[in-house]
Length: 367
Image (cartoon, rainbow, N blue to C red; front, side):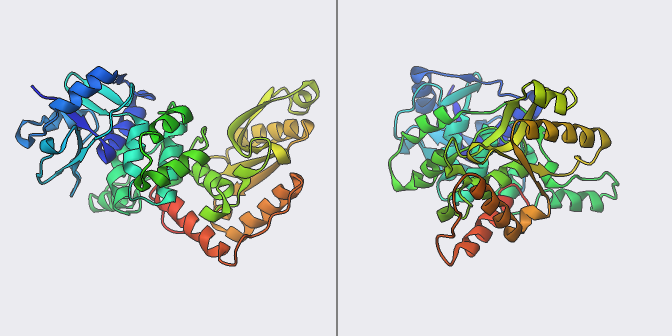
């Protein structure tokens, strides 16, 4: 009995499905020998595929137009069947780059799936997927193919609920995510990126160079991309500032004075901390208006002031206002002893393109 090795979007969907349910991936990383055997025996036969099991494991969702993406070891194993796309893995994979889901069922590791996804995608799309895999959140598995097709998520779900005359509210996509453990690491992404030096993987390799672990939500990931990425990609370049650039969900422990100023709060976790500017940039989204959160935020802000750290708050509307963001960035650069200067006259268009790309990559409409 041959193996089935899944890759690309099919694996990304299952990674989200597993992170939603288990908070971490329950699959087993396998070594080179088992990887080689799995790829050599993977000759996809549509009639023999257990589609119900793939659905139970999150790889398949019966979406209209959805295809199963399969990894095979050579051209002879490639099959042309409706609903199945085969990709040939010509270079030998290293330990951990395939994972065993069940006996006979394998998939690409998150890092390898990200590299496979990156081929033919924009910088913004790849950045957001890598940031999600490095972060402590996951998008819904059900959003995967809608986002791939450029749909606004969960607009399709809203339409279906309206048509079914259901009254259940659907939250905005900025908050439509689940808390989980990171799916991969910077080190693993770099290890996978060394598999290829061809032009088809240049976007993935560039994203890995600027990747930032620790994002806790899609909105934080958008903020990190827009503020942090280099100007040539449409960002404001805070990732390139000295002393580590920008650190997501960075913990600052308070000294005694700062703890007292914070009414006993011993530390603060910053959405985006910029060490060179001693600045904490916070995203204020849905759910931060509760009274207890307001009191806690006041305490943590006082504690940060006691540590010499200033706080800049960006709300949902400002994250769509490039003029407001640039004013904040200029202030951050000044605090870092640097001067922010646009590289080209077309920089505004680049910034708008990046922002729309980052938003589209999590199913949001253009800014």
